[in-house]
Image (cartoon, rainbow, N blue to C red):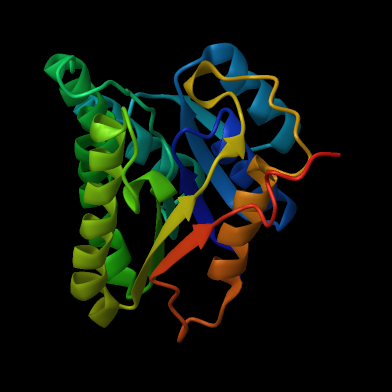
Length: 231
């Protein structure tokens, strides 16, 4: 893969931070976003990437993020839509306002940011967009109505963008990780060597981007080979 300019949302921790690290080690320029100044500073110091405190659900923040990309890199070649979180509840006790707030980040904010990036990718007749969905968007589960709905939506959005953007040389890939050992949802301490790690997902994404430009992986589900094995 030629040296590229990456914009990675939610890059201050978890999968996002792992992608930042992988991209920087490969020699790419990187701007990443996050909402925690301390975490942003730590990742920036460790990787040399440029961190921006921004919330993808805020239109003004998205505009400022794109300004930072233009200032520090001159544009965006690869957009990794990673920022997102989970709200879960059983039907009958759903808080619709909480579900709508989650959609502002997981769906509408992602669409707003991509809407701002795509015109320049079209102008250069090349680009990559990677949307981080989830295997929760492939199979329903108890309490998953809000979160799964947002990830099912993202899979459908990805397919629409593929139809629209392939003629412009822009590849759009949807990655659906299974359970990954990060602090996602406030869950920590899951030190099970058989489950997926954030770097596994980052490596998968970089492998997809490294494919010749004639190759598009439209959707990738990533599972641990044997997460139930006890060591």
